[in-house]
Length: 69
Image (tube, rainbow, N blue to C red; front, side, top):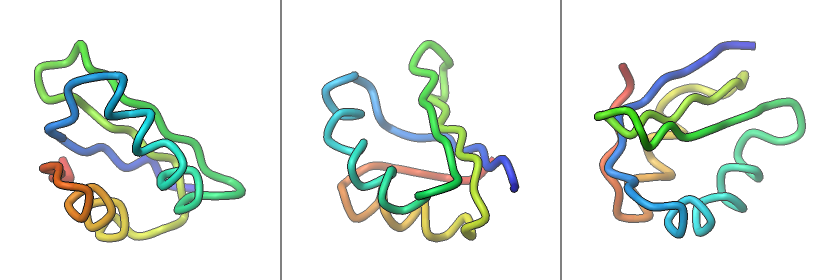
């Protein structure tokens, strides 16, 4: 399992709720994810076996900026 860290443009818990089913489906069954909106880069941490481009593509398709750190 790898921990991936991303800088995002996600700002509100309402946006996270919208992304939740998509992120859950992407990393299921073994992965975990969480946002740190108190960080200046609005960090998304993902524990998964998936490649980072899958996560960035998912967020970008939903209209968010997402860059792996």
